[in-house]
Amino acid sequence: MADKLVVDNQKFALDVGAGTGNLTGKLLHMGYRVTAVDISPEMCTILQRKYGAYVKSKKLTIINSPVENLDFEVGKFDLITCYSALHHLPDYLTGLKRLSVFLKKGGVIYVDHEASPFYWKGEQNMLADFIKGIYFHSNPLFNSLYFQITGLKVPMIDYSLSDYWHKKEHALNHKSVAAVFKQEGFEFSKRTDYYQNSTWIWNPMSLIYHLIGSPEMSFWIAKK
Image (cartoon, rainbow, N blue to C red; front, side, top):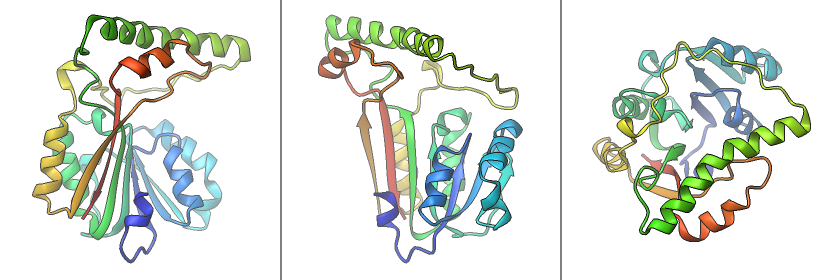
């Protein structure tokens, strides 16, 4: 969807908070030349290992840096992606403004996997709140069960260089995000709220939660 909205797409993409390459890999397979940025050196090492061939062919550039220190030419990128990263930034609005400068006119920013406006709020009734609480608290148990059954071991990752801000005291303000896109002269922006599948083994509570609870996640697509 985001890719098709880009005007005169020259296939230059910036993946911010690239992590282990969830979106980086997709962008490479779509034919983009990707600049992948992450604050974690461990993540950058994983990216190098997974996509070494793209690095050698100069289709992928990996940068170990915080968003605040990035410095690219104005309008360099056709598409900027930011998956599950915006809420890590203490000043995510300034970060978003900074990224907007690197986007060309007619380019698109795609921000995904951010807590929706409904995430921290109470539901419309006590039953919905109760089901929501059970669902969220049971997800780690089902994931733990999955790892036990499959015998998979998840390596520990050093997050010492990253602050995790996903908490009620620092909830993402979607109205402020919309205001940034407006201030930066974007042609349009749209937030879509959705339910996510939070477990590898199906959580039976998810069906009930989806029926009576509000979507917990959101993504933005904004065209400059």
